[in-house]
Image 1 (spheres, rainbow, N blue to C red):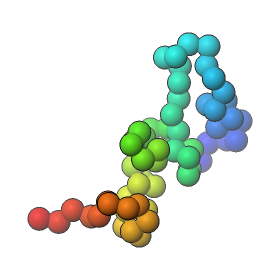
Image 2 (cartoon, rainbow, N blue to C red):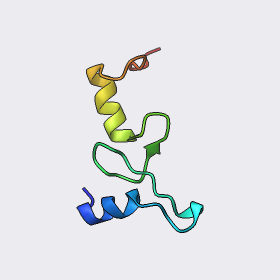
Image 3 (tube, rainbow, N blue to C red):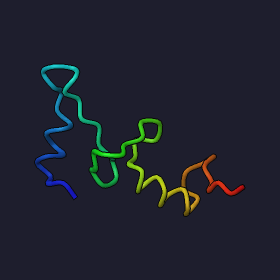
Length: 61
């Protein structure tokens, strides 16, 4: 879990557009971020297993 100051800093508008840091809104993780859902891979997996994300289910073939 990142510090609250790090999360607050990532929410500020950066001086340059390349400095944007996208973070998971649930846990604040910046690595493994999936833009379509706004979540990191870990939170996405947890919510998908619970069935809380509409249209997403565990793949099995």
